[in-house]
Amino acid sequence: MSSPVTGDPRDDHTPVIAFFDVDNTLMRGASIYHLGRAAWRRGFVGWRDILRFGWHQARFIAVGENQKHQLTVRDRALELVAGHTEAELALLAAETYDDRVVHLLLPDTVALAQRHLARGHEVWLITATPEGFATIMAERLGLTGAIGSRIESVDGVFTGRLLGPVMHGAHKADAAAALAAEKGVRLADCWAYSDSRNDIPLLELVGHRTVVNPDAALERYARARGWPMLHARP
Image (cartoon, rainbow, N blue to C red; front, side):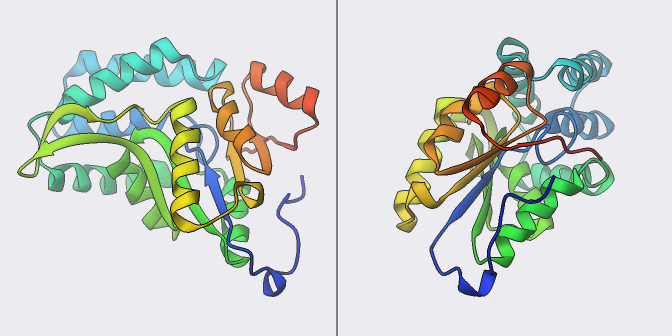
């Protein structure tokens, strides 16, 4: 599929944000699984935890996102960081990206992000993944920034409690709207990319959207509305 991002970058001076989901959109599979795997290697979690993460990873690749299972994994992820420092999570996130995630990136989607940057657009990851991990991904890819689920820390140590909602569903749309308002960007000029039916509020919020590796429900929804679709492969 040709890129939905068109036009001469030299002629594009409109402030624009492109929002990219992470799991099964920018990379294959669930990023939290690979963070959990790295946590196991460092002794943060045990065999039962890594097996549970693995089962959810396999199911996610096969059938897409399921909210009940995602929340189970999220809760365990919050538990595994409790008592650890921000510095430890930053090291874990960097190790996870360099050892695993970089090999699972979807070249077509990464290329879309780079095309947006070439046009002078801001590119933000927006994901339920912990924000510290998403930020490492954005930095490694040269993107503008990341919005993720935020975990409370006290004196640099994580408590295992969330600050605000999980960055999921309608909360993604709310966060995207808030960022656009903060930067004085018109949502009608913005873009969004996602694989999940849960991100329909985000996709409908912006003026331009492309569904990437959509789950069955999102594919039906997108086809009915004539939205562009990208089947990205590693």
